[in-house]
Amino acid sequence: MSVVASRMPEQKKVTITSKRQFTIPQKFYTELGFDREAVCTMGDGMLIIQPVSYASGGGEFAEQILKELIVEGYSGQELLDEFKNRQTKVRPAVESMLEIAKKVALGLEEYSTYDDIFGSEK
Image (cartoon, rainbow, N blue to C red; front, side):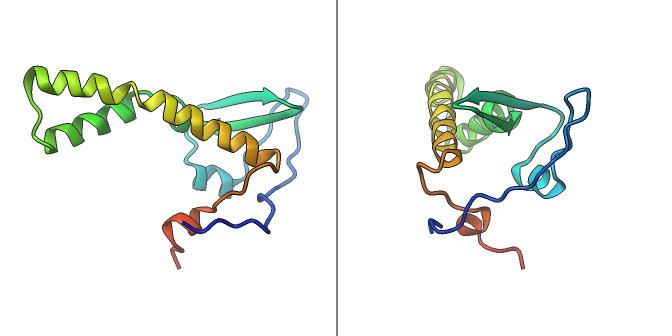
């Protein structure tokens, strides 16, 4: 994984309406995987907005965990036990990602772009 230290996080100025609403720029919305809900986190004078799917630890993780366990050959009580074990690891992993995101937003940590991790789609 290549870490880009010299580039600043991508920013775009948005307008906030009288109803406290704004539009997430299309590129950010698409690349970050936003859908119908977002999680807002406030701290250190900043507001961090993230797609629910990245922070929820909900059904999408459970389904993926179950699929992997079945492919690995688990069944019955063994499947249930290992599912519970792996599911307990989701929340700490997401919390760790959120902490890194906060540090990146504060300029205290380096970050990688989508293309750094997955390569360019061009």
